[in-house]
Image (cartoon, rainbow, N blue to C red; front, side):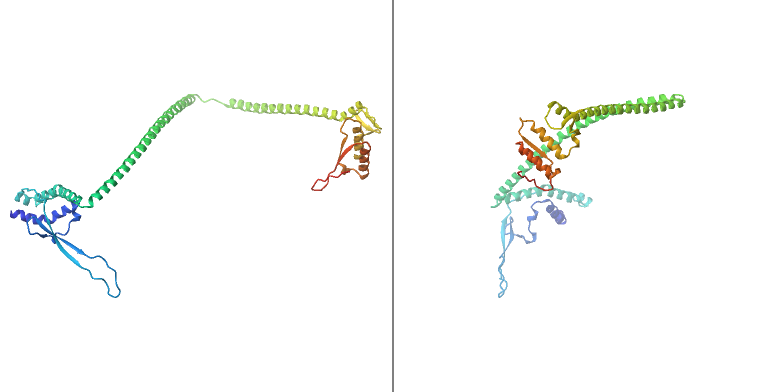
Length: 357
């Protein structure tokens, strides 16, 4: 028995450290030196320190005095469990205390501490207010678990999408690989054929290519002549087309030049001094182009008067070129013949002005 007591004292501090490191509820333990033995063997006295809280400070009287009370509460030890192991004293000495120390530490860490924590937590759960906290904690745990389940489902969907994308990429990679393999094989076949052709030329005897070079130069020169000839043919075709267009325009111009005379000759308009010679209208033996602007307008009015079926409206354009005498003469002639006329002239004014004559 003496050996047991001695070993307990030697290992008591170390075993307390093992307990503190292993237990979940050791942080709630108070100092051992404050606990006293009770009146009975299964009783202990636990100190309970009570004091008053803060009070307002007074400048005149200072701080308010407070009271401190130390009472001891009697607690009965209703949980008494244990286990006994026999360790040979010589074995423990020969192992330098490892036999007893290892046995005690492992027993404390794997057996005593879990049971003590379970007992304490079960006891704490019976305290009023703990149940409510436990329910709230259970609700929070349930919410967290539901959120975790959602996160897991979302991650599983992402994993499935990534897996599908991965499979698609694998298929694309396989298609690309097959295409590249096909192109590679075609390139290899092409290069093999070229290499074989090069080998064939390599094995041939060298030949004099001077004549071939001369023939090639001659062919190139002939090609340049042919291209020049083709260009000349194209230019000749363009020239022929332009010549035909020129002749057509000449015919049209000549016809336009002769047309007024032909019209005047066929119409037989009774205008004094008006004759037609070789398709050219003449006034008193002179071409109409030799008349002044006023004389030309006067002749035009005479021609217009010969068509009684018209609207009897004459437009006299460019009167700014006429003298005042010719303008009055033409205006009077239109009035005498009962013709309505509009005379226009170009000025430097920014706006158009209309006058009634």
